[in-house]
Image (cartoon, rainbow, N blue to C red; front, side, top):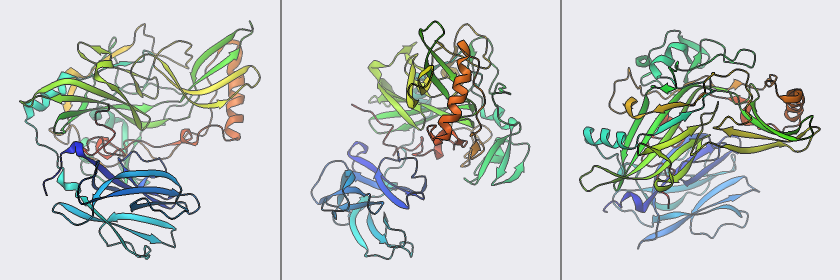
Length: 485
């Protein structure tokens, strides 16, 4: 069988949720956060039907708390939620395909879908052969000429606008490891870490700040020192040839994801309504912070980079896409704005609201979780006293991650900050007009007590590196990082 081109297939992934006791199979690797265990890329399904294929569906059963994947859409009646058509698989074996099977576990109340028939013993129900998917190894990365690779990386290397008052700056990996210790589980392995040491270490390892992480009472700056208003820290780049276009991932590293920002509307002493953005420590804090800007570039007949197709900007485990024609540029290259403290990336200066914490309580009319890339109504404990935002032009500072030694960019599967950092303690917010911060502090404690503060802000872990993030930013199979219409 001739392997179909990339644009005719979709990656099929599997992951496990311990909290749900459920194995889920789906297209792309952008799973709900509770699906955080095991699994990986199973293979590829066809996007459109072809002779000799059958449709592959997935549905959810709330009664069973089980996700089922099967050929055809004739599910048992209890499977009545979510899911839908995943794609098309071959009914019979063809060259370059592998068998996709499913089996039920009564003890786990779980249907598992996997490659091959060798299930764990607890999956002892009837073995079902669903069909045949294209093997994962049929789409190896396309080798790139180093000169073309660098030209592709440089042509649309983004410029980031870092918030002028953000005290948590980007940092090179070489400088970062001087500030941390290496652990394996709870055992300290090294107090003086080098990047060479990290090379080929597994996921059971993590790095940990030598100094206690910042708090409201000790909000020390982190990251590289900034001279003037220019940042010259490296951006770590991976270029993937997707056949008809290039996918260029610019991985950006910060020493700390700092305190979560909130926005309130409140009644001032003048009886007017005022709005303020401010942090509440220690919510959302984590050591090490990987972000990315991913640029999609058309491929000319001679292999050189063509036009800007689109840009993905990382935001809290997901990303926002914007078509190339709608992306703001500087010197012909994408311009992206980094939110203060979280470093989520946006396509403009804005405040973006997320969770609503409370409605009208006393003088406070509402309170929301936010990201902000501008300074309007901003109140902080401390701030870098700059009149202008900091410019991080990545083009002069590119490190080709696949072509450097481990001393520059190691293959490290562990976390870049400590796991399960306890952020449940609430520090007083910074001073706000009319002493409204006192109301905010009391409200934050009350909201936390009744469960209105999202749990994802209370315990936070340092991230895995780009190749080991959920979905794998380097992976050519990542469905999230392809051109959108």
